[in-house]
Amino acid sequence: MAVDADLQKILDMIKAADRPAYKDIPVAEARAGYQVTVGLFDPDGEEIHHREDRTIPGPGGDIPIRVYWPRQAADRELGVFIYLHGGGFVIGDLDTHDHLCRRLANRGDCIVVSVHYRLAPEHPFPAAGEDCITAMNWCAANGAELGGDPTRLAIGGDSAGGNLSAVCALEARDKGGPDLALQMLIYPGVAADANSASHGEFAEGYLLTGENIAWFWEQYAGGQDLTANPAFAPLIAADHSGLAPAEIIVGGYDPLRDEGIAYGETLRAAGVAANVVNYEGAIHAFMQFYGASQACREAVDHCGAVLKRALST
Image (cartoon, rainbow, N blue to C red; front, top):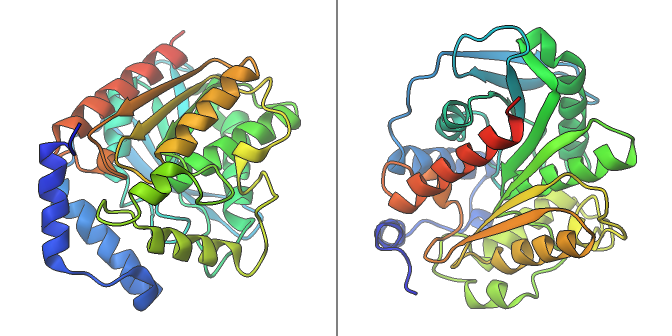
């Protein structure tokens, strides 16, 4: 199947803009450009009952979080979904994923806690993972203070955030909790290398380029060799049994497609319930293009329904 027509229009617009590769511009400029791109294709958010910015204590200082409530609810009525934003460990933040988190809270009928972990290159591996694990444990201990039910806890994220969500699920299993109802991995980067067929086939022309992937990894690694470290590449963990059930979203024209599919197969082989949904005409980051893509709207609705089932009483 061809690239989805809506998404092809987005690709054509980005190509016409002729933007430089991330490696050729300052990090601050890359971050600002990402925010502009998201705003261009999803300019209008939707109403949410309440949104609040907070900080929680972290290993490297306070961690900013943004909490979303879909409605007024009785004490412990709503489950809690921890959201870890994408952006290659370098360029995302609470604002780039604000509209997506609003929609997931509304459709999932759950409290969403969006986490702004420390970014590379200022804070290379393992800073991001440490912050996300800290936030996960904080939500388990303090979810009731938010009005949620901390015994109904899920974690998820897109791209780099999908990687970090898988890392958190491994940590939760290995450290005896918290008990996660779901790990939602949206086009996650979980492999230790870029040797898959999809990395080769879609290295150019589909938004996320091979060149930019290499640059993201370089910033995140900070000179370390992480290729044998499952906290960088969850796919290479020695044991995937006993992990939280997984919902994995991939795009047919995404360089990360094959590793997302492989992770689902690996989880199932280890006895973990894992559902993989391949939006065959989709590109990387398509779930942030709600205002311009029907495929995005369908995927957001799907993820919201999955969350609602996983976190229902």
